[in-house]
Length: 408
Image: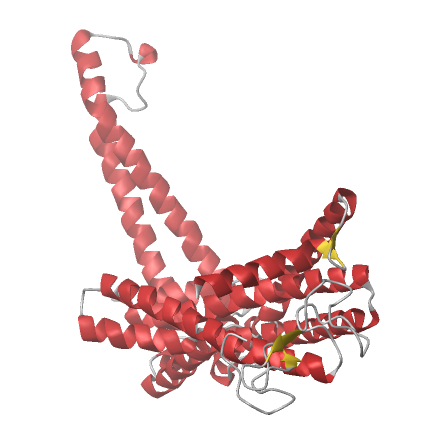
């Protein structure tokens, strides 16, 4: 196993820095590496762009979190809070929701579009003015309460100044100790008046028909359940959709690089073969990274994570053990697949013999060549049955048809 991996790594390095089995000069290698870095940067940039081509769950369901927070809130003033957040000048909520569709695949939830329509009806100029009046009065209340707090903090100091006989014009405090009570009572009276006005304005605002319709819509369990189900389904499938689009972006590049590499190998274009090999590696690196990201965060593994979480309860660290064992096993399976199917020496040797190519380096051979003129590899071995020469690494002798030993 390790010897095969070592041979594969050695072959990979040779293909990455040799042209027709000759090492390239340092300048050429540096130029190729700079090109590799530039291409790799653009590949990752393209992958990032195409991964956001399809609407993410939050953009497709823009009202979900606001609606969910409203339903989960236990504050008695939550109706006013969500109405206040809906009263914004020069904002069209439905248009903002639909703007997310531009330049993207997918569509915004119809429930959220209806939600946006109702918010737009609430967001009238008259309602905005009432909200502004409420905010102004609340600001006055805050200022008065701050004033009262400072008066209480300074009361002991003003009292000491009075006992000491210090003139009022030399005091560092705002209010004379004799007037503290009157000032506090006056401020508290104004605060109570402002609060009463705010309550009246809020009741006036919440009694508007469009606001009643909006609050009624927010309280509909069936509508919210439909939205929540749609959002969770979109969140489950979104990683799979992302990896699919990223694969669609990478596959044409991989096919092009592989085709160019095979063409260059056949024609003997050494430098083009080297550069196309580098391109093939550059395109494979992001693909492998995205596959591992999908295995870690994809829909199936999210489902598996939730299932194991319920099964194991609070012992979530055991899930990391599961990942530690599953991912290497999966990687081992992928390596064995490529060894047995893609890079199987016997399959490669059979294809190269049929095309009159070197069994080792795949360069073109003449019919009488027993050694490869490109790498020097000897193409034949002695058959243990008939003792005639037959091709190395093939399963049967070309003279007598006897089975060859596995190491041939």
